[in-house]
Amino acid sequence: MSEPIGPTVAASQPTLEALARKLNTIELRLARIEEQMGRPPAAGIDGLEPELTTGPALQIANALGSPAATIPVFGRALLGIAGAYFLRAMTEMGTLPLEAGVGLGLAYAVAWMALAAKTPGGQRLEITVRSATSVLVLVPLIWEATVRFQALSTWVAAAVLAGFTILGLVVSWRKNITALAWVALLAGVVTAWGLLAATKDALPFTLALLAVAAAVEVSACLEHWLPERWVAAGSANLAVLLLTYLAVRDALPPGYVALSAAAAPVAQVALLGIYLTSTLVRTLGRGFSFTIFETTQFAAAFAIGVGGAVAAADGSGFLPFAMPAFALLCGAACYLVTFTHLERRGRHDRNFYTYSTFGLLLTLAGSWLLLSGTPLVMGWSFLALACIVAGGVGARITLRWHGLLYLLLGAVLSGAAAAAGRLLIGSAVGLSGLSTAGWVAIAAVALSYATAMHYQMRAVRTGTHSGLSLAVTAIMAWHAAGLSAGLLTGLYLNVAGQEAAIAYCATLRTAVITSMSLLLAWAGLRWNMPELTRLVYPLMILGGYKLVAQDLHGDRTMALFLSLLLFGGTLVLLPRWLRTKGAQGVASAEG
Image (cartoon, rainbow, N blue to C red; front, top):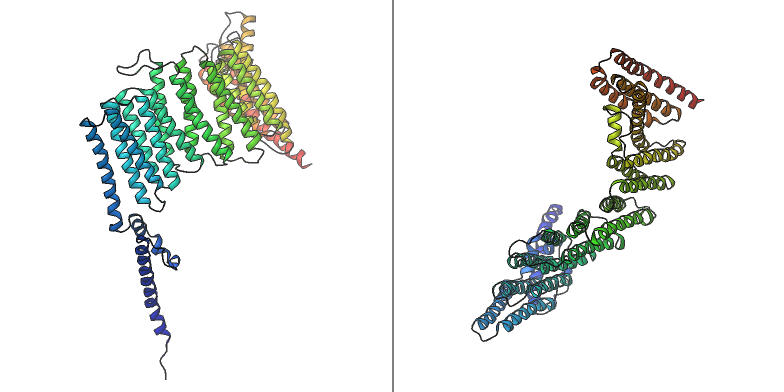
């Protein structure tokens, strides 16, 4: 009887797999040796197992290669550095003139970077070492030539540094080596800031940092080196802020080079232009979504560019009007992009809301810097009405909320909201305290409320309710109640005389609050708008606060009696009325 062969075959499987793994390892080693000898790899190497070709240890081994191939790379780098020291020694001995020695040193550093650019892309270690050698030659040379020997002017040093850094970024892009981009960028940024601090000449090195930032943004538009954008942008932002700080000072700090009048505005416009262009290209041209970097830097560039330009201009000349006008133009462009380009494509995504938010913020900032007082309130009131109308016509809820914000800011800025509060729950009487801007804001509130309710009534017919009507009704109720309280108290004092008891003015304010609560309850039930009835009890809570804070401290018992009667009666009536009207509404709907 023969023995079963199943277990024997099963036991042999691991042995066969181990042999296959060893054969693959031998093939891989042979392929490396053939590659080092300049021969093409043997056929079949593409069939290696993934873990043998993609493991972390093997990746490092592939990058470094064998010691026989790695050691000469670093040896050639040391010889390159030795060549730089040779040029320096020849210059120190006087064999080479200072200018010639510096020029040859710069050419020598660039030659190493060019050599890295010509190195085949597969030799990543060779490319990285040669680029690092170029940086190690250039940075000490340009520092000593500018600071110690003063053989280079700050403008030439800044131009060389910017050009060299950009060259390193280009080589990194072509070879697709991120480490090289970091080396070139950090070397350029750190050296530029060091030279700025040592020479105290801010403008040339600020422009150099801006040029590097522009190169990084070009790379980002081509989807390269995205993490490095923070370093380039942060350095450029700080440099432009420093330049603006120096420009607005009455006197420069000791040792700093004098700045021309156009220095700060040029840098501010350049910063704004770089990141505005980059953001438009990436989000609209390439179709990428806004990143955290772009949202943050877009806002920072506008804040530095617009605010810095206005501060540097000191309220005189053309810039105080040009930069806010530019912000308004950009705000209008953001709105145009949002509601004609992105919305037409049906994209209510991150780009849609980011562009619409920037449109709001830029419009507010530009108008705030360009206008003031009554003209500013009129401008925001016009924007509020325009947004509410456009949002109602096109069913654009985002525009309608923007209009509500413009309306609220106009009411606050004009003092109308505060005046209504003093008339309703304070001690003010009459309407003489309202300014022209306040009346403009109140008129805008009334028109906006009527417009919003017109579109809301159309939405109610389809069973749609929104929080916008609640918010705009709250703003309208606040101002209407304040004006009513001011009108009634003013008329009462004119009829009864200024010697009349002030306590009855508090009773009149309580009457206004309770009447407004009943009116909101009736309107909400009458037109099937529950968002209006939600304001009833918050308004009564406000009336309760006023009752405790004012009416109970009055010196007339009859006035207190009337206030308690009005407030208590409303509290009894409102719940019963809301239940009755609600039941009638349900019955009519069922019928």
